[in-house]
Image (tube, rainbow, N blue to C red; front, side):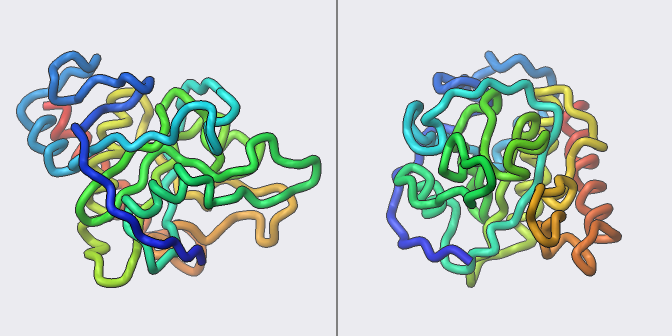
Amino acid sequence: MLVIIGVCCAPISPIGGGPDQAVSWASGSAPISGGASMGQIMRGVNLRQDLVPRGRHGRKVYRPMTPRFITIHSTQNWTANAWQHSQALKNGALRAPKRKGGNRIGYLIWHFTVDDKVALQHMPTTEQGEHADFDGPGNRYSIGIEMCEHRGSNLGATIDRTAKLAAYLMIKHGIPLRNVVPHYHWPRRGAKPPNKNCPHFLLENGRPGRKWRTFLARVDSHYRQMRL
């Protein structure tokens, strides 16, 4: 469990994915088609941008990526909301675990953190993060979304906001539902157990089951509404 000291961050305009100068999904300039449902659902996501500066910490090395998967995580941190996790990433407070051969980045970083009020973007969806499986395909080809579970928050609202964001990213990047996966999906070489129980509250006995299928059904429902 990570303990992160809270700070206050000012909200900024909602954005989609892509480079640091990403366009707003609401601006009409994003390369996505969709009807009124798209705007209604994305307003509920409350998507904001709070990027780790390029060249620092988890973005110290530029690693381009064409995303093929969306990986869903849980923070397992009961002390911090999305803004506090974002500040920790920008401060370089979250170190990547050491492994044989070293770590090229040295810091954890993922693309989005979601809580019951907001979804924050930390890096472009066209850059590789450090959140899943060291040098494996989970990091090389997937967008990482962390769900907060801090005390007093509404976990159901966080899960639904995450499902909406995942549906949006599926449309933006042409990712099929079968490629929306839990962190568990990516074995970590040298770790015991290799498949992490994450997101633990959407798994059963440490493995995907009914709860995960229910989550995917929710993602698919939002996806279909956005495509109307």
